[in-house]
Image 1: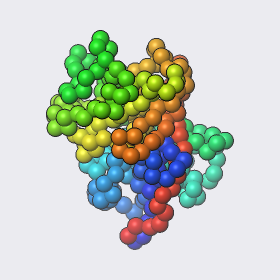
Image 2: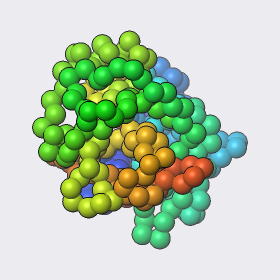
Image 3: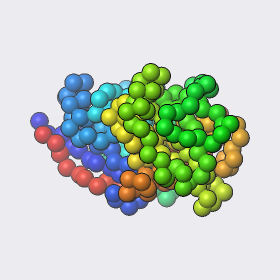
Length: 272
């Protein structure tokens, strides 16, 4: 059995600068155990499986190297790119994805960027500090559930964020104790009033640092929704410490949040 396979770099228009997702196209013949084995083999932060859907343009299953996720941001955008490019769905400007988090709406912009409308978040303020991550004093620590569950905090500036070297063992233990995916922290970029830098850590799920995290950025936008210090539309840069330079476009609206960006195929072929 051979299945179509693409590896798509997300949140970049240039190959090898964003966050890769492996996409298996037309995966109806695979069971959950086989999908999990493939995801462990690719060893990317996420591997997805495109399936037919009776209620949407396609159904998507999303796996980390260790377990299945109900939703994730960069895999959703990368898989939509793969679905359109491969002809798995007909080319259109509006898509609906079925996944564990329900139905996700996507739009394809004239410049080629793909945006998704995030699922409704669940928010909880925490009376705790994130181990080994020094946050800006007197700022809240918030848990945001958008499918993946991220703890969000703000750091003083982009230089401090760039220099951050968390204790991964302590962070993993703390994440497991809270039942969260990991921690995403952000800081004002200093480059523009409408730009931030972001880093996401999920060592409890075999992803010490996610290069460019869609669900993490949705969670940061949820954290910023009421105050909007960077405006209703801003750009998040992520991945520079890993040799990447992803750009996530964020749109905060009163009733929802959108994130989007470019995607480019780096590997196109089949898997056995």
